[in-house]
Image (tube, rainbow, N blue to C red):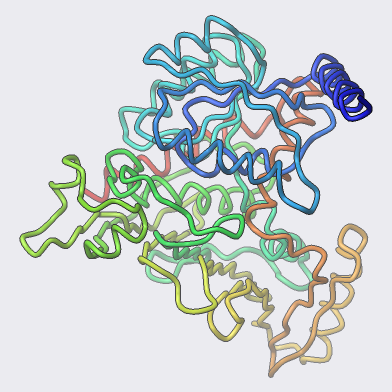
Amino acid sequence: MTKYLVAGVLALAMTARAEEATVKLVTLDPAHFHASLVQKFMYPQVSPVVRVYSPGGDDLQQHLARIDAFNTRAENPTKWEEKVYTGADFLEKMCAERAGNVVVISGNNAKKTKYILDAVGAGFNVLADKPMAIVPEDFEPLQQAFALAAEKHVLLYDIMTERSEITTVLQKELSLQPAVFGTLEKGTSDDPAITKESVHHYFKEVAGKTLKRPAWFFDVAQQGEAIVDVTTHLVDLVQWECFPEQIIDWHKDIQIVNARRWTTKITPAEFKRATQLDEYPAYLKKDVGADGILTPCCNGAFTYTLRGVHAKVSVMWNFAPPPGGGDTHYSLMRGTGAKLVIRQGAEQKFKPTLYVEKRTAQSDKAFGAALKAALGQIAATWPGVAAQKIGDGTWEIQIPEKYKNGHESHFAQVTERYLKYLAAGQLPDWEVPNMIAKYYTTLAAYKQSR
């Protein structure tokens, strides 16, 4: 009897919390694992009841399994209650029922711009995984979505997790210290002042489990080429670090210099290992050679100028990381006083590590003192951050482990920022124009690569 009484009390408490919560999530066609990572943790102002609208199928089942794993984990379990609708009319049903006020969109990127526009048109706030657009034809509807969001007083925002990575945060902070960094150089097309490189893998682990990739993830017509997908993060960081909290005008501030794209080879055995499928679906046959090797054009790089500053971004997809490794990131910001470099290779044990490399004629002792003073100011926000000299003119930034929370936790940090914006009723004034500028950049590079 007591067991049922306790269960009843808990159910009533959950219902009360759901009714009191100011934010009620809706998940639309969750076909990418990022959709679940928004729910890896609970948020006080978010209802535990989440409405899910989907056409059904394996993508949905994988999503629900991840949420269930969060709910049943031993440490800090979540308490999400997923209420699912499946059917061919799932999008229309979501818009008609209006069962929540924030739609999370993370899935097949070929559908995403339409999903965003329809959700905003129905009066939903939207938190969308990148990329919001993958072909030039998506740019105008995306602009319409932002205009409609302003008209309906809802917030449309994309999930830029890399702004929460601590080495990137400190790279930005140090670039704002003129006694160390000097001023940002302009660079040239052959020697950019900003370089960002990212290596990703089809076969990987997420939340401690091997990730099962949907077959459509290997189709660039559905997932998007690297030049419009992962580069979204890199272009965002260029804007965010070089011109913090400044409005970028896509009409005049951006010029694509050059762009290219290339393929990755994936064997049938590797494809099966990643997808658990024995055969390629029909839509992938266009990328399969006579030898049975799948060659998606999933890599891309481009050089461009942002307000005259030369930047280069590049993304490469391999099948699997080396032992002990994972996705990696390289980032260079070159100032007149120093280079700020993030490396994440075998030497760093595949952990992102920030270095400061002196470029001035001043002595290492004088530069080290300036760096220590700069870090003293930064430590007001990030206590414990320090520098260790590791060679002539080179220092490694020492970062306390508590700040190294990993990619998966960054989704919660982005969500928390978004929830603050919702409570305030507005985004910072630079966010929307800079999102538009970001997608203009990636889509213009897409056209240039051809």
